[in-house]
Length: 85
Image 1 (cartoon, rainbow, N blue to C red):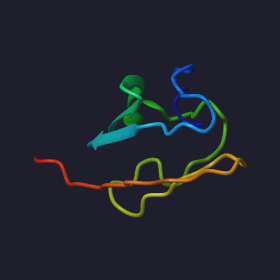
Image 2 (image 1 turned 90 degrees about the vertical axis):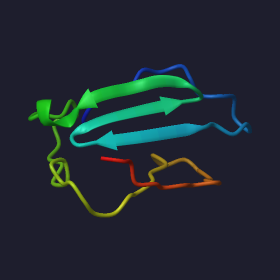
Image 3 (image 1 turned 120 degrees about the vertical axis):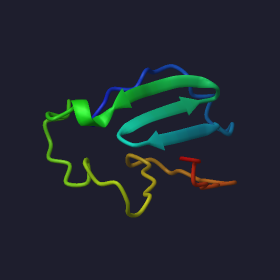
């Protein structure tokens, strides 16, 4: 709930989606099935759109978490790589 994502790029239920998340500094870019749905500099968001506190918003290291928003979700072929400086 920090930055609104563009909608309408998910495949039908039962088909796999492809998602790529790139974080460089405070900039986050999220693509779903080849379409950029978020491209934002998190440093510019002092008040998230959902009005909630996000204690990890300014964090530069830590864990990666996956959320399903209450629905059943499966993940496969997860890869994490460090980007070049």
